[in-house]
Length: 278
Image 1: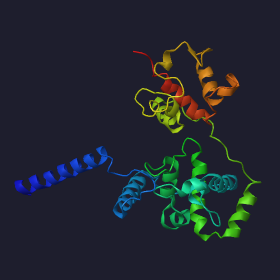
Image 2: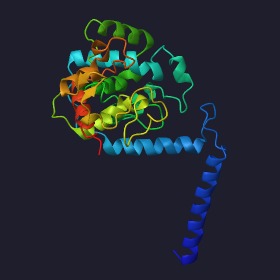
Image 3: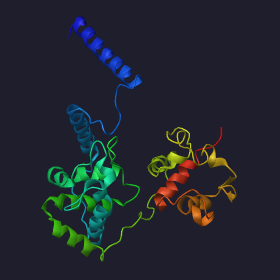
């Protein structure tokens, strides 16, 4: 490429970035969910998302799934996934109809996507699409069961789906989280804290969110405080009880039970211990 060509290319990039800044600064870009993306934008989102998911998806064979785990996968789909994606004979919930981009029907996903890609998207979520991550709410085995069920979904009719869900209700219940299997890890705890929405109510150093909607106290310096929740000694045991069952410790507390499992609780505590005043 000649110097002239490089200069022209750089100029186009700079003008494009400047135009994007002006559009954002002046409010010209419509961020409302009622304003659809350009078709090219949808294509780019899909292309980038699929490439990212595939590069991080598990390699090798899908692990074996026993009958009880398969049953939990069916129930998880019906109780969670169908709210946004629908199911045979069942529309999305009303809130999902207003999402942009709209959650795709998983019959299509089951037909077109490999099972490892479905697992990765379900476990880790997809940014800027409304698809949440379930890795801190379900075990890997249950997520694999959901992915395997999605692969079968294109072959399941309306009556068969309803009958299957009814039958599985007697065989399995949805577990919250598996028992902790690893030593506490502060880096995982930082992710778990974000995934459970803690930064939506608490200002956390280095994390966005709490500054806009701070309904709880700041967590700055919490790792070195003498007490938590106003009166409890700041021990790991009390922190774990407070994270998992706040209303058992302080009835009427505004802090809800966020369904944090044992492993995520241990990891979050390890991360909170790093938040000490300088």
